[in-house]
Image 1 (cartoon, rainbow, N blue to C red):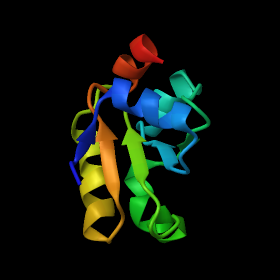
Image 2: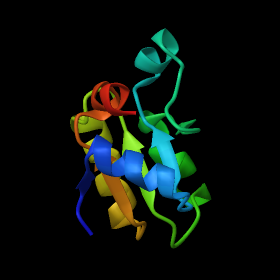
Image 3: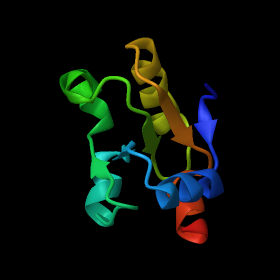
Image 4: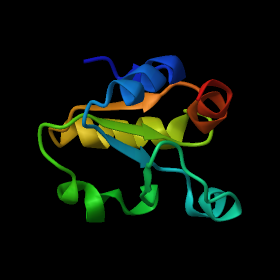
Amino acid sequence: MKKSITAAELATLLASGKDITLLDVRRKEDFDKAPETIGGAQWKNPAKVEQWIQSLPDQQEVIVYCVRGGSVSQSVQQQLAESGHLAQFVEGGLESLIKTI
């Protein structure tokens, strides 16, 4: 599985109705400034990933996004993958999603 997914690929995936877990992993201060999420995503604090990682469903794709698809979402994606989850981050992050979805 690729580490990343484009905003267009995510839009197609969401439209397909496939059961995925979509997580907004923007830093708390970024989320607090603009708490809207995309497509029913749940916000999870990336600084506390160790506390919530085990609550994620097994064998279900997990897609994460941050503001720009940089170090925050890539770090969370890596931690998820290392724990056995099928995880990808959104290239370009929320900024890209807003333009696409």
